[in-house]
Image 1 (cartoon, rainbow, N blue to C red):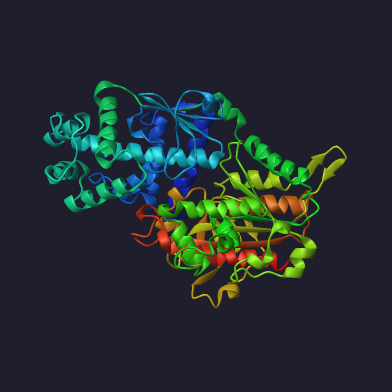
Image 2: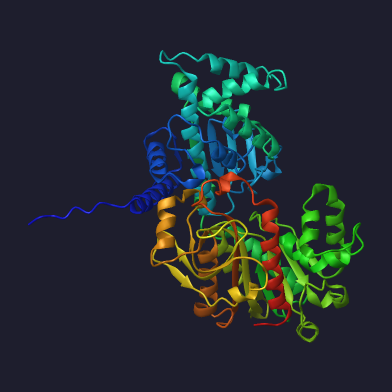
Length: 567
């Protein structure tokens, strides 16, 4: 009897690599520590290289340091991480009250602490998704550091001339100026294995970003620490505190976060009014509701919410943002600080305090509905991966009171977010009809009250279909994404929270019965990137002004549905 050999496709190999990554990461988390160049760390590196995520570009090329991916990762890790041999992931363990300076990465809201010259602590409050995200980024850094180390040594094991020059530039505090810039770029490009032009472009991207250490500093220290491990046996190590391992998965932060919201609603007697939950960009909601009244007399005159939002995004108009905020505080908004550690800010908007005659003409509403029902809009900032389940699960639980549990009067839940698109481009809109949870058999069909036809007169491309909720955007590669797009799944995009939100909503409405089964749901995403198109991944740069139009289109549609009573 002959045995048929079935060759695995690249998509299958990639999915297996993702599974290996998560199994190994979970094992190491439970173990408490690992060395990136020990046996376990090597398994993570090999799996990531097999996967070769799009966001990490040329990670598999041993001769070229990946530059766009390097900036992307450095913007999401704490300043100085490249200098540290030891990285420890902690829970909220009192460092916020210490004398250590808090370091917040440019593109991720997480508290980090430089304990000494060799050690960085990173506070984890967003659950396992945050841990996997950090470990993946660190693994990328170690892979690129090895490339830098290899190019810093010649065939005899001595430091190359270019590396010695780099050492003098960084350690000697040499300022890059017009006289030495091109010479310095020449040394750096040799070490990176990139062209002079690519090196110069990346140097300026680092300078223009919010990263405090420039390209020369980051590259030098990545190579220096790798050299010290190789030549002086100064091993690098990643560890997890016992408290973090005990707390993970127990909703400690989500429960504290939700309790604060419910206490405010209860003490201000807002639990008698219908509540509409919107997870969205906080500035978008605030500007859509209040900017018209607060800034109607700005220089040049009022034009539209979208154009005003562009002006407000400019730092020279910071005083205008303060005017909007001040006006909002006087007309029904409560800004809840976040002492819980979730890093999810909240706005509670009581429409009963609105001056309806001062709302923007772009904001459609039903006056009779607003006056009779006085809806409350509960705006949540974006969650991160699995954290979405934790916060929504806790928010939808009944309010505990002396007289008994009081159900949360939730009338609708709207989710707006950024997502990767698979068939369009940046700025397009996606309306999902299901969320598929990558790596599991879980799928969540939804009755989406937001439809593509809601945008038919808005000069924007709209895609409708299932979306993948991925384990991490930094772990997606072309083969997996093409499979989800081209197979019978016919997925239109990828994001990290949808399935987690929907799992919590279904549990609350259909199993626990803590909210009504007929809860109105609205999901919409705007495309921040297309990971299948070279130069259009998240690492290629921010969405910028392109994102303003879809952000405000979706925001105004969601608000209109709420304010017109369309349930």
